Amino acid sequence: MSSRVMVALRIAATPERVFEAFTRDINSWWRPNPMFRFTQAGPGMLAIEPLVGGRFTETQADGTEFEIGKVTHWEPGVRLGLTWRQASFIDDQSTLVDVRFEAIGTETRVTVEHLGWDSIPAPHAARHGMVGIQFLKRHGEWWRDLLAAVKADLSRP
Image (cartoon, rainbow, N blue to C red; front, side):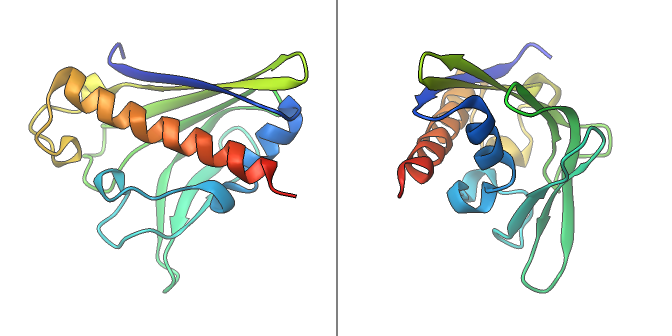
């Protein structure tokens, strides 16, 4: 898994609070992107079960549920790991999201690494015709926007 996206951002909150916002409050800050949606059904409600082996899911308004992946690391305030797949992936295709939370003074540096895109073939629909660095750059921009949304959500009174 060498093809990856990595972004980081500092947020004025404790690692424990940022972890909680990232996991429990995911629907407050998550910004669906039509290019990177999980299913053709459109955006639903996301949920992360709080334990290693827990499910990462998206539930549509009609109750239809799609399992995006599984929790691979659950260390509140330190690290979150998730497998990640889209409905168009074949059974053995998935990527991995590794999120780290590090205290830097009174802030938390959140680092997201999305690994394994080299396991998804270049012509796959998930890449939208983009190859190599072009796709990774676009995906990184989306993760940067998502982290900015976490930061904005935590800065609200």
